[in-house]
Length: 232
Image 1 (spheres, rainbow, N blue to C red):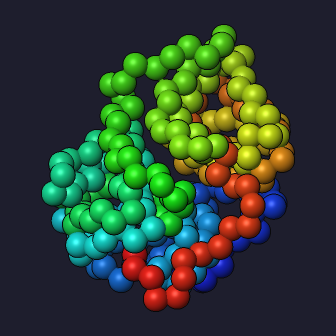
Image 2 (cartoon, rainbow, N blue to C red; image 1 turned 30 degrees about the vertical axis):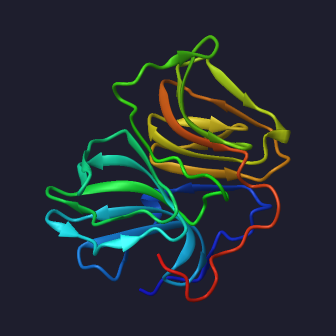
């Protein structure tokens, strides 16, 4: 199966995806497969994807011409900088490079070509051992990164807790690491991904306990893919 060049590319619409219902698509590297969530571009693209490394697989050394942000969902992801366990959040700014691999296999949530100009801070955070902050009854938050209007965090919700994101936040994107959540009353299952356009307020709640990756403020203005001929 070839990779389409546009997937959920209308950023003015609401998208809620049960990723367990999406097929894996092979990448150019043997043993590395992808589930595209949104995408604009060819093999080099502005993309949000789940990426699965089979045991013993690797990806050739490459430069992040548009920057790379990822969250380890399961297994151990490795490169020359270390081994990253589930819950580890990493930002590799524009111009950095690495040679990723996984000895026993892993799955990561990856965002490519989504760095703002001037955002040059490398980030590595083990969210499993970090100090979370109470953000109201039934809600805990772990800030991960902020640049301009873009904010990235992890959110924990317990039964009865809710988190409000105002419409002026500039768009909302989330991935459910564990449990189940509801976004504006719509269910988002474990491993589910959702995106709400700029201008839309979002209320997050959970029927039980849930842990989410959350990004806001990054969907204002026109969104396009990288220029033809750009690097990965």
